[in-house]
Image (cartoon, rainbow, N blue to C red; front, top):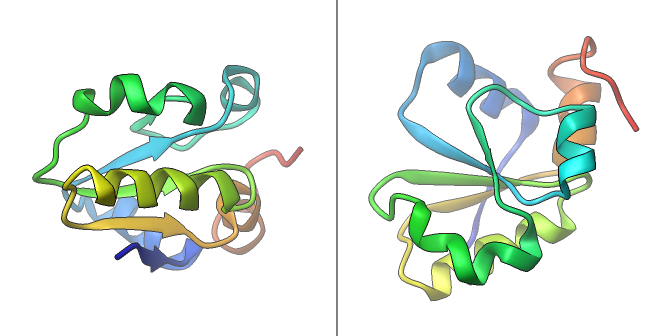
Length: 106
């Protein structure tokens, strides 16, 4: 089952140094426009061939622009045996609006 994390909680995790992996499934041009620290870029279309680069033992937070692609990615990871996967509600756009207004939006 895919969990959910809201922008404010993710911001707190980033500030506190919580141990988790942040998976960005957007396209490279989107990542170049704006991304969160420590995020790993694996575009959704490439995830089936690259998910083994991720640590199954860590909490995984998936994000995209608005939360749709990352929900698909999170469901895929759960189907591959990842135990704790969460989708960033509203994606990086909601994160910029609710948790970090300094981030550019597109």
